[in-house]
Image (cartoon, rainbow, N blue to C red; front, side, top):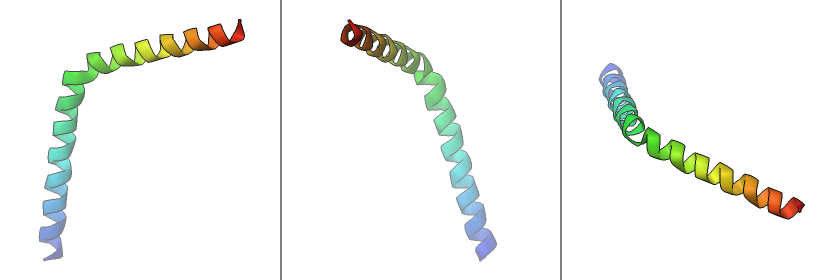
Length: 51
């Protein structure tokens, strides 16, 4: 019984891992663009504050 539950949990984790890999591969470029924009905005804001 516990082995069955463990197997179901493992298969769920594996399916989640693969779906996350797929999502990450699909949206990775958008994430990089968003991070770059946020970083440039943050550095620009800190520069404006320093001036």
